[in-house]
Image (cartoon, rainbow, N blue to C red):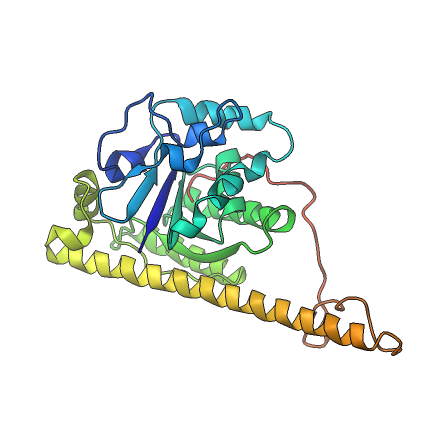
Length: 292
């Protein structure tokens, strides 16, 4: 697969481990793409990743944090800057991954507006459970205002401490919250030293060679297939809806004088009753949850 990584976290951790060569603090990156003070495009700033076929839009130094603040006071279209930039290169890749910080700021909103799907990464802890609700509220607002195709592809519990009572309790809470919101909880990633060791060494778990690495690497592979499957279903449904709408329009155009003909599809129905539609009272806020 041709993969593009976008480091949308001002800390730049993804850049530190995924760039083939060290990225200097003054090197052009995502900040230059999002800022209206430069004309850099994604192709201008992308660097080679550690594996063949992988490119990275890097983040280093304090520039992305400054651009994040710039976006707060920017005018119309600020939420769509990343989506607009990606439009020029998206056909060059099979998969684009956007890594976000654990905060709901304008950088995260830009990522949500640009994406087809969002993977909610959290932990089995009190503050993570609280942050999940805030994140889902932001996702719903982004879907209504900017990106109606956005889908939550799953909730992933990271660094699970399997033998603690606290983790078990909060994992149950997350399962209940996810079920209430119609979401899927993916197989948790257990807390293992090998995960951090492989990341710090910029090597894949499948390259590490230990039994623990192979086991966890298999979980990640399963997650990727699940996410791709969820997005494929979403896109298939969207295509079927568009097809049905177009067919209906053609039928109405051929029989304009029939009393039953309508100019547009009626309201969505579920179980024979009209499904209400509610818009959030305000656009996405920048108040953050602890974990995403």
